[in-house]
Amino acid sequence: MIQCYPFELLPLPYLYDALEPHIDTETMFFHHSRHLKTYVDNLNRLLKPYPEFHECTLERLLLENKKLPEEIRQGVWNNAGAVYSHQFFFAGMTPNSTKLSGKLKDALFLDFKSWEDFYEVFFEMALKLFGSGYLWLAADERGKLVLLPLPNQDTPLPQLLTPILNLDLWEHAYYLKHRNLRADYIKAWFQAVNWAEAERRYQAALLQNALHTSR
Ligand code: MN
Image (cartoon, rainbow, N blue to C red):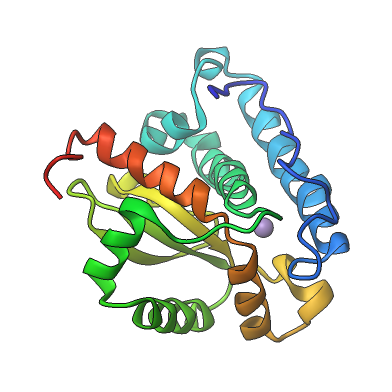
């Protein structure tokens, strides 16, 4: 779905309580209806006086951030990044039971050796990310998977990587339920991951890079 100004608070693809007991209702409600809403409102407020950028997608605002006027550049970077990252994060979870499969599974085993190795590396990186940010699973132009911890609301897009999954590690993503226990939240998030969506994203990345036959 192509989005541009004015950006909207897109509804979640499930109800606020749908990810219980893994991700609790109160956290989902505040995360979506308050935190994401604020980022959407901030982004629209920043862009409002600049009609020449009203056709820009989130991706373009991030990839071509340097073309923006200096007075809104950092603000748009932060808030467009936040809207993109949150929509991506919410769509990367599901109440349905999904399993790692298909081309993504093949690539993950190729690049991380085994599920256990992947899980361990992911877990450690998520635990160690200092301050606020996200851990991203992304694919490079050859379809190789990389784990990328990024601060704040930064995305892998400017590095020309295609995001496959992201884990929001801001305290607002888990503090209501897990308080300071980030490890419990990481474990819980793994129970809610939408592997079907991750596989769809990975296949789209391969297709986009016209590499679906080379791996
Ligand atoms: Mn968040």
